[in-house]
Image (cartoon, rainbow, N blue to C red; front, top):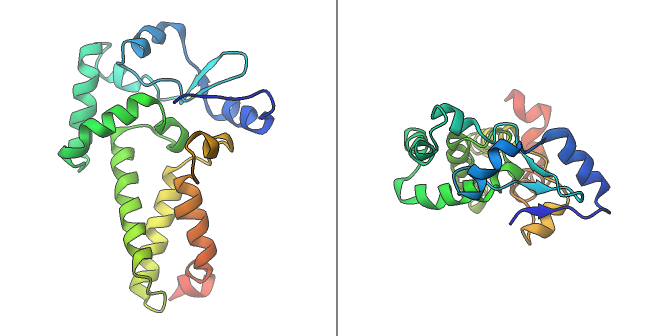
Length: 188
């Protein structure tokens, strides 16, 4: 589901050029063999764009393509990821989509994002803004997710067919509960 950006998406093209790098040709065979993730974006001129850490797991595996999947799985498990989710998340990582949402496309960041989303959704399912523990938990989880996630390209909303996790869980939550981030709230 690589996003091929249209010529008219000038703001997105500028964003992608600022925060992503052109995929090196030496990496292309690893992508084609399903060892490394697909490009996150393709510019209108056909340039495949990837996050800067795109090939880090291959480098960590000393260039051994057969060790990349095992490295992902081990790091995912050691980060506290659920073993029944590792294959689904590995497939999602290979799709290149995590490059659209995470500053670091590591197994650890994927686990952290999932845990933070779960925490925010649970807090929002039972809002208790008059309780300090709830405000602190929500503020901490939203701020942590904000630190993990990229801004996203505008095109991603069409690409994924829905608002992004940033839209739903960071921006909308801050708009719905602005008092949680007010200076008075944070001094309590």
